[in-house]
Image (tube, rainbow, N blue to C red; front, side, top):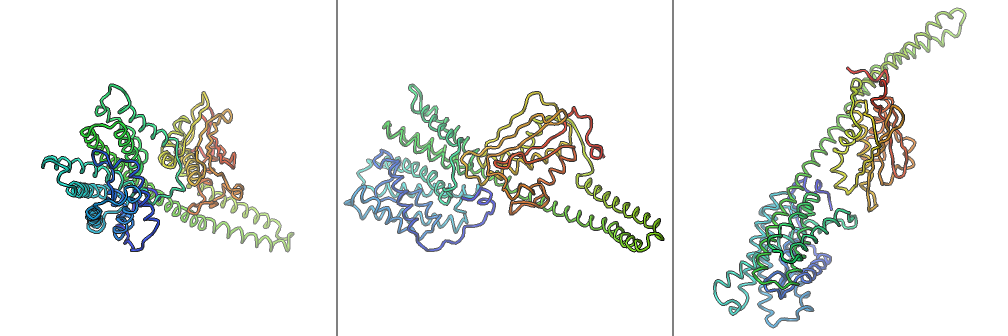
Length: 551
């Protein structure tokens, strides 16, 4: 499945749906119907589950939104075929078929209103999409409740109040199914499950849900309703970590767990209704909290992407300006060197006559060559930003600032970060901004190398130790595939890169910045990759004489 930025950033209306029919969609719908029937009991005292011959409400709405409204009659047929081996052919099959058709027609109307009237994206990309879906879910739940309650025999309820009570109870159960099943289908149906990896944090989050359910229902002498709020804790954790996608999974797991416990304990109907109300509040809270987190991350990723594009444009502009400056500044000394060289060659025809003049010509060549070197040094100082601004700071502060820029990206990719600092490290004495640039570049490269890693455990480590009496050594390593063999020899060359979108300037610039401080930057290990660089400490007397000037 696409990343949140790719899915949510566009804000485009859903693409027109074709009228083709896929057997894979029908098979998935049938399997989903069986799965929903397996995790709930049709004979429950309240309508928590599917009834025979009734299309599953949340699953049907999700599939209609994703694959097209023309699937509606086929979904009714699939529901009938799935129900035959489970319930057989009911004697009142015609009223049941009529009720199923009426319910499906209502779902088609609601789906068409969402897609064509409200222009809602089926991927639920914004708060607006989720809010309108909630409105449609409320209407769909009333439709489902009305079809089920009013299609049964009059003897099922003794009076009008009993009918109304059943209607409200069924509406709550149907609304919960819509709020849990439909978003789950919409957000995960197109996911690339081949690339999915179970992370350690996911296991802990699942355990947290299980522990919360055990505390609510398992502890003796406790009030289940009093401790229901405990389910909000893992839900908040998951929603803050994985956004709307994680919230839908957490709600589904909580709903299945509660239904299983209620069925196992055989609680009274009133108790079930109360739990349904609590679960309804949990579902609405979880969905909107997850959507808030996702939209915020999308905004951050979009801002980061624009900053990256702006930085690249600025680097290209700076490179163009430098190229023009080099061409302009070096043109005159190089032309002079060429002219003097030709004159010197002519003088060699009669060295006795032109001997003193030849020596003067060679001196002029030397001066022009030195002038060209001065031009290059001046441009290099311009590239550095006018000189260094050394100050004292700790290695812990430098690492913390570097991780602040990449931690969110690492968390989204499930990358674990470990930092190790040797004891009694002296303060650093360097240009804090430039050293931060070097560390940020190495950390970004490490995160990018782990992005496509096939390993289940993706880790990154930062170590800081003494290099010598006046320098600390900072190393960044990752568990990714490492540096390609054909890149090892030219890794620090300008414009050498293995990334399709890269410029090949990051490591070259970083080495220039480190060497300006009298340090080194090198590839310590190729596979897995480990880069190290040295930074002067407060114990060093001075920085290099030609670099430590503070403007």
